[in-house]
Image (cartoon, rainbow, N blue to C red):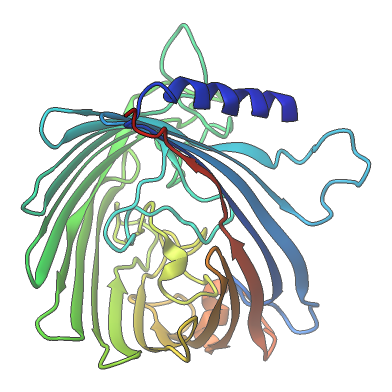
Length: 437
């Protein structure tokens, strides 16, 4: 493996040495993260011991740039310390994967196309995000057509069509091989458009995403191939900077289409955040509402909004009680929060954020919509130019309605989560041939 890698690098260097307008880079992203969990993602009952583990991402990235062409390949191993025996001949935990592999062609004035496995990240990542907090990240197999000009206008058109594998008949997509392909993330097809414009003190984006999901309803024990259902997510992200240090951000999104063949989808999301940074300290107030449903679609319509491919860990509390692999098609959420980011030096900062959570719709079994209050604390220290230490602590002060919603009785009085992560991103090589004199 080592000799093969050396041969690949030498070949690349030899190939680009004849052309001066090219660049080759090799980088890494290594981040071990130790976590202490006692109520992360869900309430734990009294008497349950905390979970402790160390997870690590080890990612190697190869980049290539030329005048009208770019390519990028990233491979990674995501594993928990100790999950592979010390003397194992091979890693049997399927922790090694291809993270990204794409090519980018530039053509015409401002136009380009990007093809392959790639991260899709737009605006504040509420709807489409790279999910970098998760060790594995989130990537799409997609084709993009992109345009931008000097006036600050940008346009992205994206397309994706997914299959289980090679097949000479039909286009059935059943990623889990269980006859149910309606999971939020496992779409059969996607088409989206993103438009963005920058002005001096204002920027605005509009996003439209259509996702299709395979119909796989079993009939008499058989799984028919019965077309697809389509769901649309659309809306705008607006940012205004009316005065020095003041920033106002607004999100307005809707969801329509078919949830299943017989259930419609009609949901919305609205958010407002105001931040002010008079000096080294940033203060912020905000609120978000994600519509919910108190009957689970039994009336023929789902009214619960789900931020489909966003970096959801960034929103609604770092303990991930909502919309991170949970809370889909539920009672929605109202989130009011205040935050402060204090720079205590040139290389460090301290974040404190307080959330007040309540349900957007009635919770079966209780008249109380209050869910809980969460406190998030994060300290960040830059150690080297390519290395950063982050330490975090979060605590959930859950209400009784949270127990009802999560289905946990006799929950522990202390629901908390602590973590420490070292993010190291060294550049191993950045090389371009010298101009020929």
